[in-house]
Length: 450
Ligand code: HEM
Image (cartoon, rainbow, N blue to C red; front, side):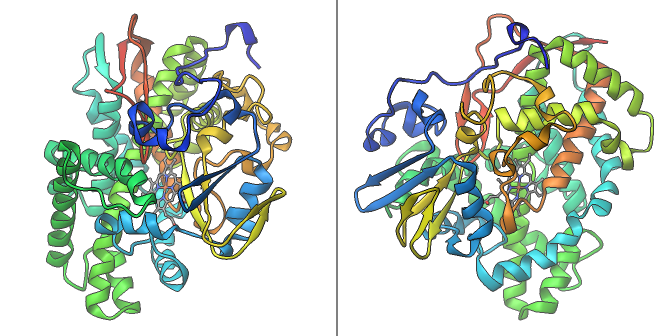
């Protein structure tokens, strides 16, 4: 482990002594930013239960409680109806929003495309996109790594899953997706209270336009393919859905899942990449070690690259701990239950926050410090399996986890092999929590030749 005096402690929002009253979530910074305003206690207590009008919300942080919700009693915890209602216009009844038999059938359809062998075959595509992105960078100067990461992962998802359809890679597409995600995050609180987000603010209107663009574009793409689909992820999915569902339903589900995978598949990894570069820019010793490993590995077969990067994998794991790209996810209890000694009623919401659990004082030493050694081989025995959940866990665990890990490792290897990264003096990094956790206003870093 690095000496604690020299460890890099990266940015996080200020922590007041107490959490504001429930209605403060509707106003000011807490309404705009889901990771703002959490008190010191939020990172020390095991369970908080809040009543918001008629709604009861639990925030369990003990890993035993998380394990019960996500694994041992997962059948009792469904995707909340209100969140489904919120996401339905964008994602329909696709994998992320479905429950029960509809979810199970869809998971069977897509799971083989994300198995390790299938992902390994995409590593060359990922490496090509990482290299192409660097063509725009100065040899020495300032770049926005968050923007670069989003462009790269967007190109990869369009290429790997949709055979590089140009309609999904334009700057316009990128703007629309960001706006649609932003509006979905902002609408969450109103959805919790059954209020519809009214088109009164500019960002809600822009978000709705973004959602329409995405749905219309993907509808055209799916309809043009026809029932035979074509020779890629989307094509395979169209054919498998047609084998299981009546034609009209299969087409709808293909569109819903195209939207689901396009959205879930690039913003999250883009954020992981940007945060990883930020952390390495703040810790030059870790960066040098990661670069040496990257330089030794980069020339070999891309299909096995991700398996030759043990230290970079530790860096990535630590990045996903400090900045979980999905900072929260929610469930609704079907029947009464107990979570680590706390009673939960039917209909209660259970909100799982990797953002809080990954920095919990009772679970992690020096929890806010960047220390990839936490994930060194052999150290996992000292951890509860459910105190580290960047990809969720149990049956609803992220189906794209392997894709994301390989993608992040391949891109980081190529970038680290070509450039040195440093923090921008005088720039304060701020966080913005919504559906995803991203750096507010981008993330400038300095690059130079190695
Ligand atoms: C670092 C990157 C990523 C992170 C941190 C992440 C995180 C997560 C989390 C936490 C969940 C579970 C949500 C819940 O239980 O409610 C999830 C589910 C999901 N993710 Fe990811 N994800 C990432 C990348 C990807 C990629 C690359 C894809 C696809 C290409 C993807 C597709 C999905 C889908 C479809 C689900 C729903 C699975 C189901 O319900 O069966 N994700 N992700």
